[in-house]
Amino acid sequence: MKVVIRAFFKTLRLVIGPMILLWEMITRPKGVSRPAEEQGKVDRECGMLALYEFKTCPFCIKVRQEMRRLSLPIERRDAQQPGSVREELVRGGGQAKVPCLRVSDKAGNSKWLYESDEIIAYLRGRFAPQ
Image (cartoon, rainbow, N blue to C red):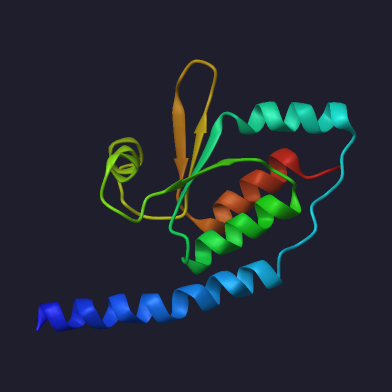
């Protein structure tokens, strides 16, 4: 029975996944425009951030859309498949849950944000144009 349920959901993801990604592409927001110097500063600050995601997760898409809206080049890491990225997410944040934004500081300390609304509030508070 477990095999049948897994096969059903895997097939469902294969069918719906491309439609979700197409919708994301169609509804892609236009990013904010900043002066080159200011955008360079934002780019450097984004080097301390990493988004752990699944490509077709609606909550991850919500965060990615906000990243585009704010013109943030945050590193994206696919944590869907078992492997080093997923292990890093569990080891650092404690859960294999996405979306998750890892916020690092210069001392090497990391803070892990797991809720999409919390991630978006953090990004807006830190990077939204005044």
